[in-house]
Image (cartoon, rainbow over all chains, first blue to last red):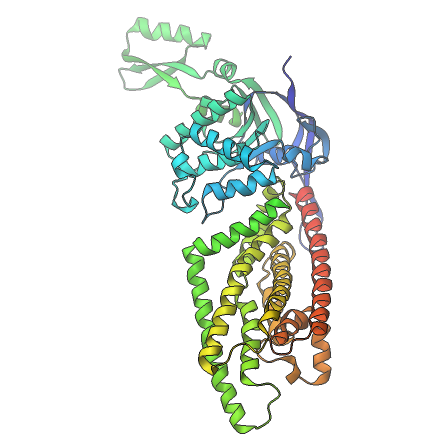
Length: 297
Length: 263
């Protein structure tokens, strides 16, 4: 049986803010009774609109924030109680927050990180070269970080996060600002690495490309509540991501008919029999449209 | 302690490799040289008007080199970086790394001092020789002791930098706090004039603060060295460093609690 590495049970976080010096305390529920489990080796997309509670949840799971109520466990540790043990077993990339010294080479930064994770210099060197070879950035290891492209820098950041062979990797907008080619490379390296070492990946991204190419499962959160927990394939089928038949009438108006909507089929038959159309074509509905429609609901 | 030791080394390396840092440092070196020249001229004028001086020009310029060297080595940029991390909330992401934020930043500041201090010290000594034809008024075998104490002063200054940066959580803009500390260093630490020129009561006040020891205490050893005095300075520096480190740890715990509870 596959081991469960991340457990959240009715996780709740309420922020209290005082309005003015003598003002009353205002409470805001950022995360509300959130429950889910992630198995070892899974690559999960944790998505939601801005202000939906994603970052607060990740911060609770990575020991940055204490919850107001509920429980959580990552690799068997309660994050906010076993911070020091937990941080040695997880890897994180938070947006554009760099772990590398800007004026020095990635190799120099890795030396400090390796020492922080108690890796021997021999062990660290072989790991760095193994990852650099895999991520195709061996030539960049000794160049100053400031001279690297954003794509190379992100791959270097990923190496810094993977140096200590973390069992769980938390990624928050890892491809933000990368061009298409760099995004593609980053995703393929991440996928290869996760499959090779069985790393569990907990990914937050607004880029649907990241989700589609990396994740098997989606956790969708809004207003602090879990709206959906579904395998990616099921989501597409259930919410109609896929194909739509478009009938262009002679008047120029285009009518879209979902091939899963049985009520619309009779309408389609009517249009076809009346021969009032000038063109018929199939259009794909992308995942982004589906996710946006779920947010709206 | 290995990551912290490496952090010191990496910051020393970064100082040498960063062209921007190098440029800023060069300006500091030029400024120190100008200051020594101006004070040398100033002292010559004073000497012409008064036959018996409390302190001779070489001693005074050496004192100035040590005191100003410590000031000009200050990594102000780190204060801004820490302040920025506190203000933006990015400090929270530092908690996920298996290193102590305060200790790491302290080591990074110290790494910068360890490159800047010896360079400024040597440049200052060279300038004094050019202007007066004399070497530093201290037996060379005592220089390592003075330099060791200077590093302890740099430790205190590094702790100050981290403290000021972290205070952004409560002050929002800690720049006025930074200015107050800086002016205290100038006045109470006797940066431009040894505190022996001050009235007796004010000398006592200066020595009741850490700045009297980090500034005047260490710098005066360059012209008036004795083991007894060096030991007294050492003890005071240890005590003030320990007190500030304690205060810093309390401040950091408060910040961590606030970040962990309120986000």
